[in-house]
Image (cartoon, rainbow, N blue to C red; front, side):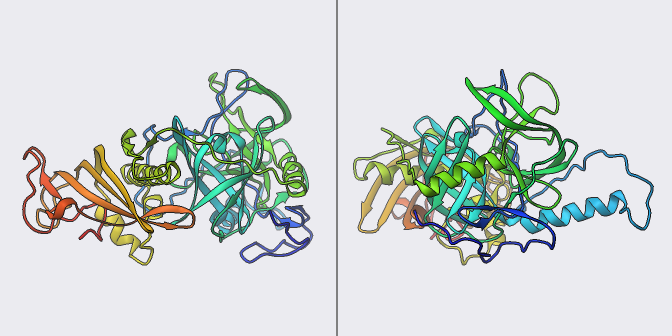
Length: 448
């Protein structure tokens, strides 16, 4: 792992405002905009696991949706020296907009399914997150907007619940900084992440306590930050930021005992110590090896013609692609394709009402630098959004060959075509008959 030069400003990182001190991260790299993402919650009786891939989630048809629930405060009477509450809220929202591009989504394939988590960019090839998001991963996929890249764990500490991840492809956008000063009780904060696998979401709250201890999934932890920003599974690993956009912590867990406001964040300064140690002595963690590669809906990808690693990547891509479509997370779905020059809006409109199920991987084969998977499944969609030759059809059975090419260390979807030279589709209930000519899959506008 290469070290970063000290005291440099990398492209995309926000400049520090005069008079503000930031704590160097990664050997001098500054982490700008501290955000704590809410996700899995612990304390005695809490759970700290990434959002399960199989759990339904609520999405949005827009590339990224944000919800900001302002904290309740008692404002002093306005004066020339004191900004109004509205002005303060607007200023915080501006800070969030400045840093939001540095928040990334984790899609992690494991031997028992997989999960979703959050993280934030600290350097072109490095992301900080919590350990339980990436621990035990066979395929680590980092999604930033409509770009996906493979990654591996460069350092992990399960006891502190911190992990540093290195990506194959460089990341862009905002680079976060760890706050040089500890937070104070009553400080306003925002948490950025992907709760329940939904598109990027922002929630606001308050720091309720510092230096907390808790036993989370049997592990005694310390130096935790308690906050009351709304959070659910999937936000774990995301940044918790203060009103200056500096990271005070990493969202870690939330309570399951019914007590409101008891969400936990790993201290940003504690995470800084771990990262510094990993840079001095890298501790890369190899991916786990799973016996079977499960794709969408648990459909197993045959490994007879593929090596286990390739089968795992292909299965993970299909799982993420179709789940994202069903959840309305169209940016994540779009990121699983190689045709990034296509119109995102065109793709989104084509899959806007689609709900896909009944997946069966019939065959998988590889030739040279290409993998082809024969997939059958059923889609339901609104009238007017069916196959090109039957647009009013609301239920369609598909038989398609999906082609994959390797990009950024992942096998991504390069296109699809009808299997066996037919149309590739039939109305539901027609015993698999494939009507004539050009039924193109709603899920892939580029289908032949």
